[in-house]
Amino acid sequence: MTLYIKNFSSYRSDEEDIDIKRTLKQKYKYDTRRQDNFIHLAVYGAKLLQEKEEIRPDDEFYLTSGVGNIDVVLRTNTAVYENQEPLKLFDFINLLGNTTSYYVASALGLKSKNIFQISNNFTYINSLTSLYASINSSKKDALLCAIDVVSVPDEIIKRVMGIEQNTPVISSVNYQKFSLDQSDAIAKLEFDGKTYSLEEIKAQLLYNNYEILSSKTKVFETMASYKINNAMKTKKDLILVECFENKYKILRLKNLQ
Image 1 (cartoon, helix red, strand yellow):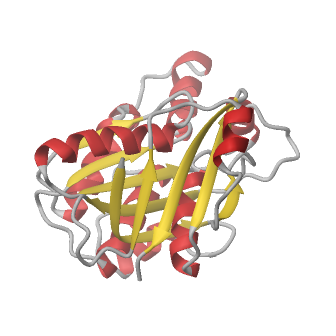
Image 2 (spheres, one colour):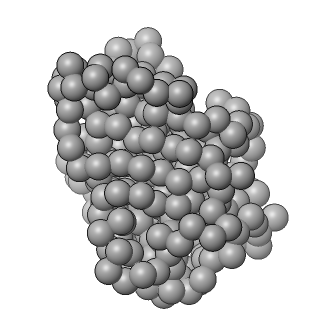
């Protein structure tokens, strides 16, 4: 499967120290009321992409995350089960998976397919597969948002992700605009539906001229999306290997500009 990337945007909390909510309000004149940090970050990444690339109303939209909006889950659990309080209306609304997708679509003026998708593993690659299958039929372009937000306290997200307590975790959002049309594309991304063993991976990587990276280090769950964006930013072709429980999947990125 081959997808062409028209443009991208990235934000990592360890690389930029900005107030996302204030930036949305002041720079983009965006109404942030009734939304939380997860939604704000997703909208911010979308606005960064919109500054660089035309977004059409019929573009499809996919959003994926390693653990989703975990802070609203924590607030809900504390209110209902610990404090025996009624659930706040907007916490309930923001708890729904597609709420973030709705706000992003509204911010960008999108009118087409809108999907919130999380997988137990390989969530970024699985979302790419779904996106490819959809636009192969519809012949439209599509946006993919990969987002993870650190919980407060961050011990919660570390337990959910199954990583050591001393491992640093960060918030990040990464977007790409994908197309089946090669014209004006800045890169192409190749992948397949196979899951490889370690020996098969070694055979696959034996002869290549690409930089090879592994996204196994879990600084944030959707690291693969950032690695793809960073390779385009630095104009380096890339083979990226994702691993989960001794199973492997491969992404191949080739810059076209």
